[in-house]
Image (tube, rainbow, N blue to C red):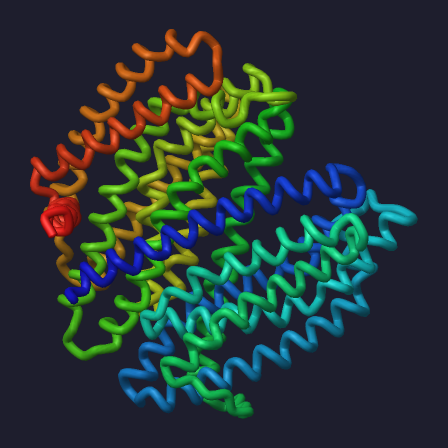
Length: 517
């Protein structure tokens, strides 16, 4: 199987599991709301979870990002046994660090809750401290989860890491349906701990299958352990810098019309569907491939080929998504969000933010992949510097555009900052790798844009032509929306095939062969 076909198959599997996990996650949130409402207990639970997972989420993501290139380097240069040896070393180090964090978390829990939830008093404060302490084992399980995820993905074993959110959400759902009425909010936190543990357990069989055996070993002098620390720090700093964007946007939005913060939040979630499901799947599959090639001598051509496949695939997915979301922003928000307290005004505000965020969708998607290219080359400094530049551009533009366009200006500033910094990343990559096939990317970009614009015009005409038939009935409106989108997808893929976009042609030819069989 060629690398492109293998990558496509793995990406499709990750997308399937991600979509299934998101659906189960939605069911989980609905059940939490149904069983516990939206009162002081749920507020306390979410604050306690934030206090428990905030630091480890950033640290774990940074570890996962940096260990994949290191695992690949060790396996290529020193063999599989050395890779497993390093896996055990870093696993044991993280285990003891997590234990230290748990002990400190237990002792400092009242102080932590006072810092992140100043308004909590009396019974609510005591409950928050209790929930935080009950949830502390999550720190340990998250750390182990991210290490196993990195180990498996570096070996191009994606099934278990992609599927680990399924048992996570199912444990929540089982608890909420069968036990929540009897045991209450504290037991919900216990369920959270068990759900996090399940993410470790589901990865163990796959790890054993590729040769992993646990061994107690700690070697603090291991040069790869020190290298992991050096590579992780810039990723952590970059993550912290990116959080500044969110803080600045929320601070500026808080001075605008009521509902501006909510509009930005909902718009971000809508755009993250494409980035979280499709783009992350591609980046997840391509990353270990890039890491392996970057550690082979005189193999930059192969690395560039894999990178090119990733870039073109992202362009093919995100360009039509961008056009489609811009065209159908208002009906999408109206159909899926407008009910109850979410009125027509909220729909207009949210759809405006969606449109302005979508302008930068392609750049945001490419940014995810390009950062992985740098990480595969064990360069975490350049993405960190790029993140700092992005924040600077975003803050400057936000201060200007918020006065002219309100919350829409904040969304547009984020998009412009993403476009600017993605171009900077590409330019830096050209200097780092030498010549890259810009002509091929531009050709794919132009063909996708033309196909997407034609699709967009047709979809817009179909939806607006059929919309009067709905007569205000939401079911019919949804049906017209889905039919329009379905026709649009078919038209786009057909045009891409006619334009001879290689990645689409390969998929359609494969489907045609399957149909003939």
